[in-house]
Length: 76
Image (cartoon, rainbow, N blue to C red; front, side, top):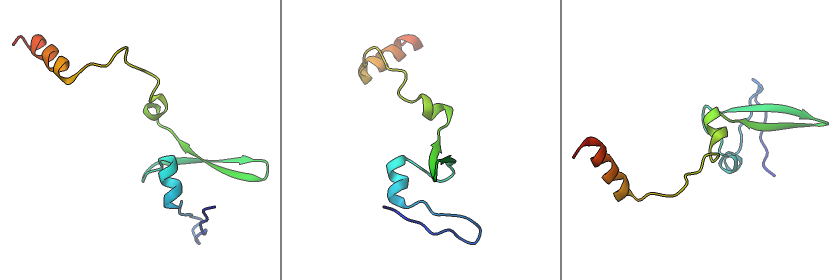
């Protein structure tokens, strides 16, 4: 179990292994949620992060096909 000390200012450092596991980065936000006798720390996801993975392409397209479509659209 990872641990951290509370500073005089009430700050804690989230251990690197926990930050990596949950994708927490500098400037990110977290919620403190009380659950019975526990404090749970949850990442706050931006709208973009929350929507990640919701939209899936119908089929994949190769880079060559993308380049071809761009050339056609540009009139070349």
